[in-house]
Image (cartoon, rainbow, N blue to C red; front, top):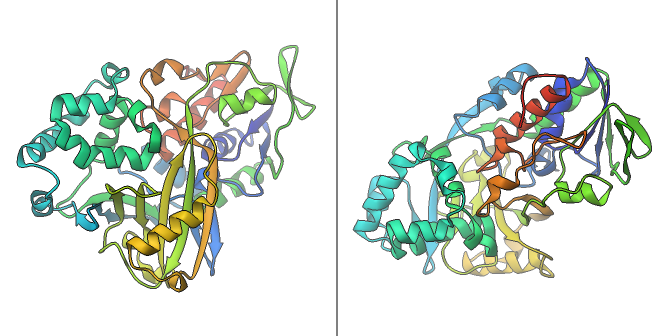
Length: 410
């Protein structure tokens, strides 16, 4: 079959990798680079992701893909530490002693939080889909646990839309992050960056005859009998991995829109650590970013020759003017960094960075086949109720199996 894949993110690349060799594959990516939200910058001779990334111990489909590509031996496991910035103070929250000392959370709140963590994996997520996370936490754990612990987490991931997020996402988030030791969370990263995964997929697809068009947006999608034409070329099957509402503007089928949010992520380099050794610092204090992610408190600074920090912000609608400058200015003031200390910075903006797992989200998830067209991506059931590299790989492979006549449905 001649198959078109729209979108060169992880889902599209995973599907193309699986289908190439057996089928004629054409992949269209509007950006001049592959990877989508997993893409990277090349700075000072090294690769660093545009948006912070790590993987989890249960990401078995991702690991299987890495083995197929011969890069699994480069996967390493490190400790990701977390903390909260509150009242102008950085509070690490990793060891039992640090959690006990955290002044923003009462002893009763800490006990309730511990019990919730222990039971998260056993919770029926479907029953929580229609319940707002904010309401669930306040009703079951109290206002103190919500405002002192969960509200900063929700703010760092969903910005102003945090009140719409379902309790299903929250419980999934806790469960996926349950691989913890006494000093932090066990997280995975590819030595050399996840650009190695993207490059390996690209080479595999092209080696098997697939054609990849970078900087090639899809401007026309039309139904021609039982087939679809993409940019006026007819294909036996089309797999779209971009948001359904974006595809609809090019001529795709009309289905209920998936709630998405945008992301603005500033990456910068300085010579010193300013987050006290913490990898992921959630902002409880009001700031133009929800989290400060110090990549080199996770991966050794020696690999880069400088400290790399992400300022993560999510938005709905239009991004405020000069958002990167506002974030950098606030960061410099808050963490006593002189502007001259910043060696370089980049800003990545994606208006469709990922779904917002609002209440009732589960009913919006489209099946892989829609009116003779295939769809898979961050909006697929494999990425519900928490998106991940694992979910994106699974979505690509399952959609590819559907196209090839496999038994996977949904």
